[in-house]
Amino acid sequence: MAGVEKGPDWDEICKEFEAYLERCGQRFTKQRQIVLKAVSFAGTHMDAEEILQQAKKIDSSIGFATVYRTLQLMTAGGILAELNFGGERRSFEVVGGGSEHHDHLICTDCGAFVEFFDSEVEELQERIAKKLGFTLTGHRMDLYGNCVRGENCPRRRKQ
Image 1 (spheres, rainbow, N blue to C red):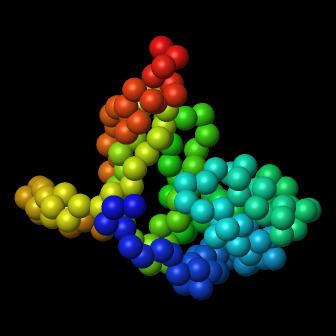
Image 2 (cartoon, rainbow, N blue to C red):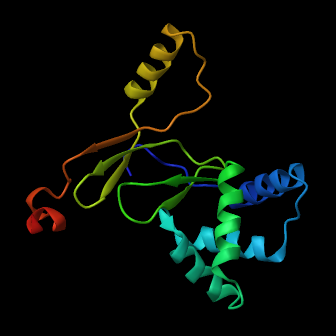
């Protein structure tokens, strides 16, 4: 991924999630720990079904409802971001634990995406915010366009 070098610190993510649950008056249960571990194994931009499959490898009794509820808590707690690149399924991306910020280029035909970081874009966003009287606390930028696969885009051929 261009310009993105640092992955998440899973020990830090575990602490962040546990602290968030404590602030909400909830416990860091064994099931939630399993879902967190499944997320760490699932990779980037995974959907709930992929996370469920990973969780079932750890504990076959884990159900979809438990995974889904835990993903919602992780999203609310700033551990995950829920993404929709135009497909039927939403995916999740780790944003906690010191993960490096990045933006996305997304194909409107097939949903393929490229992650990128550009310091000039980041500086421009800061200048725009300042000019308009804002102090940025975060952002997410998704740019949509034609597939990086060009004429090899699987959906484009079907049209």
